[in-house]
Amino acid sequence: MNSLRYTSKDLETFPQNDGKRYEIIDGDLYVSTQPHWNHQIVSFRLGVLLDSWSRQNKAGLVNTAPGLIFAEDDDAAPDIVWISHDRFTTALEADGKLHSAPELVVEILSPGGTNEKRDREVKRKLYSRRGVDEYWIVSWPKRQLEVYWRDAQTLVLDLVYTLYEKDTLTSPNLPGFTCRVEQIFQDLK
Image 1 (cartoon, one colour):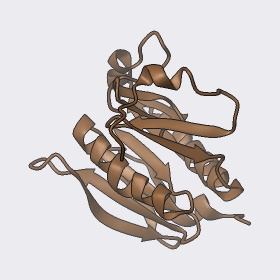
Image 2: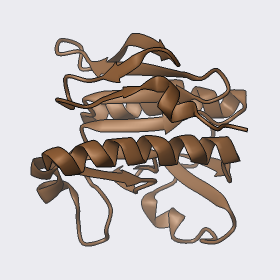
Image 3: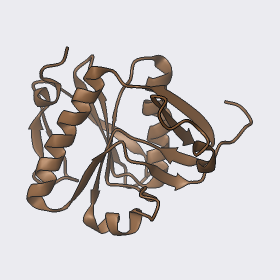
Image 4: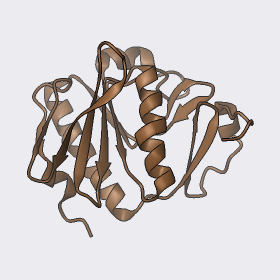
């Protein structure tokens, strides 16, 4: 990228209602446009499924597009997070943002090579470094979901499997959570 290093303070100077999402990772600025309709449908559906499970077992909280501020030059806005009540008590600060890693982060891919590289490489590296236990990358055009788990030895989020519509999603990090992947992608236009 360039030699200019952005910080969370810089985000305060950007327009708030311009339809763009601003993120800073390793001091580099990433700007995304408003997501596609299908992106938002998938985000909503997956969020509802996770929220329903989480409310039943009372183990944590789900939120969409929360602010994650890991450091002054690592300020991300993932599509969905799930965080246990235990982690939440120390992660949420007075600014209303999470300042430590949730257990699960979900990114729904936006079209374009730059967007995909950001989610697959840059954000995966950031989430690995900051202690996220599980990372899902969802592609609504391909109707697939990739699941990454944190390797206990390397502390890196490694791909463990790719799921398609007829598969069932479960997770050892979310005991009792289960859903058919096709539920996430139904009614896409």
